Image (tube, rainbow, N blue to C red; front, side):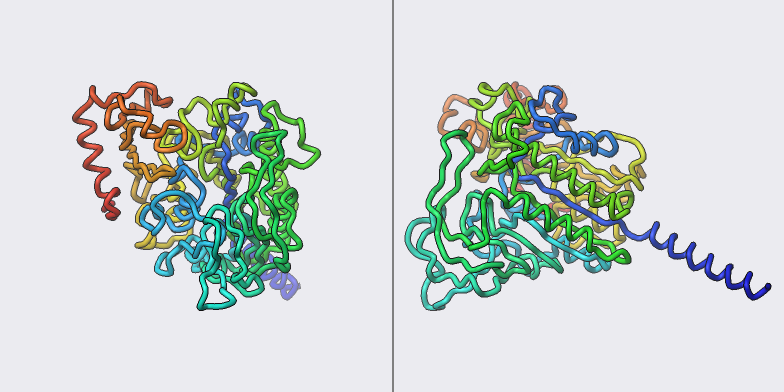
Length: 497
């Protein structure tokens, strides 16, 4: 009898120990990055939205929403660089614009990525979706250039690219154990899937420029395409890969899944079941499909039994490319009431939804007006896993205390730098925002259209988040102070915490 009791006691202790370890292990982390989706697209953030987003609404209703969150750039590539490295992208070789499909890798070997950081904490790591950070394609003839003819945005003569060879500088060289990606945006060639940095099918043909006149955003550039690539099903394909990764993940080891979507960036290709579901045209329907992807991920987590201990983050790489004509046609403001759009240093270019679902830590719905940047993800992961913030992540500040509700034990972000498509700088300090330009810094209001404007713009974001009243002449002392804060960043200098 005593032996049986002792055996039961040992078994009970083992079970309790396993449960305790499972409960206290680091959470799984999923970072979903939408492509060109605006703050105002989410119904729970904008009651006037013409787009139903039930799954994102559910995340907000049961989680945490940061209402003053920003992508570190107003366009694709720079934000992705900042997200994975904790560095503003203007510190890299890319000072403006974005990369195209055949440009070399952007992330430097000397920089620590989020994936590398989390691997040190014994995470499984995966990147599934849109990469858009450059790749080191192999040349067939090393004496010849990688491609010739045309221009970077309309590459056609790429006969020296060896698509059969593994590329370097991709996810698997930057800390990801597994990757399934497309090289750039869905409208930028080459159109090919790369699994663990190698093409999944021969790249044997080229597609011409495509444009469907039924809607503004149904188009893509000409270029090389793989035999297994179909523009209309890419979002479905990467979602299936992400769900499968969750299903097959190791129960005894936490995972990090970086899941950058291809939607709702052009080309707008909503599946048949989503057509007509919104009141914002084809774009709105594609956002509906994007929201459904979130639902699939959440369902996969629930079926796996790991939803409670998974830190699920949804955000966007910049604001929506929603034009004034689109607003007039559909009465839908994709960037809510914020001025500008994708590309701009105005709020509409980089104020993004930032939603967190983590039942183990967020018991009731909350909203936070803390100022956070996409560069802050790395420092947050460092604090979450009890690691020091890498020295290369000089622009990253942890927002973990905002999630857990605990007192901040790390540096608190005091300022934030914004950056536009043409390299225009702005700086935010508290409720003040200084823009180092006369116009929007992007496509909304080019600088050459602002001859009569003051040389800079100053806005009180507490009372004027729509950036309507320029206080440049009214607050010279604030302008002077913010310029002193901004100048080191413009010179590329790291700023002491």
